[in-house]
Length: 272
Image 1: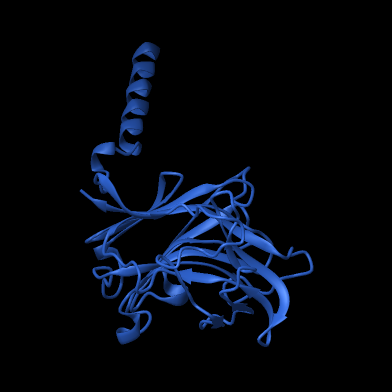
Image 2: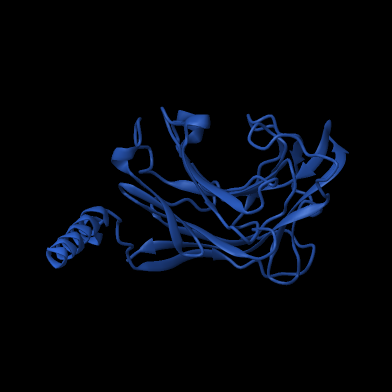
């Protein structure tokens, strides 16, 4: 009787295990295509040189709708190469054009815009409360349809007060601002301001997939958005370091200045 009872218990445990462990056969992950490199900047050049003007232009000004505290300039003090194959976007504590900080915001608008593909950058972050670096894409039709109808793909956003976390988000009509569709990727024992990491998005006709160091942590399908899917037209690239604003709050006395987001490269691919 005891032997039969033990055998029954073993079979029951095995049955429960089979019920509760998910099957890989039901995975809905979208396979990645084969990619071909079509655009890149490796940021080679002399220290203090501005980035290639055939690839990048500047947003010059302040706020950008997020209550930021920096004035973004085209000065080499804020945007320049370091002579070692990197781009530096440097935030500084200095009074300039009525703002208490300066920084930089560069973009490929009007120079390189693409629909779909893989966009990636290898970046080492700054850190500290009130520091807000980002690597992102914006719809090229923003001048005619406005934001958020143009769409926005935040490949990487980072709050300097949380140096072990980054965020990947999309914004569009009906899911913008605080309602953006977002996920967080983080480390338990590492920080994004200590080493370089590769941030990427793979964008197809009906999906977006977000990666850190080739680990996919966020996937959005066309049917997942509560409003119109607006990711079917050309977008351009933006790299910037904001200071303050409604996403990160104010810098504190512990926030170091000057400091830079260091970008090793930006590369764009198309599917074969």
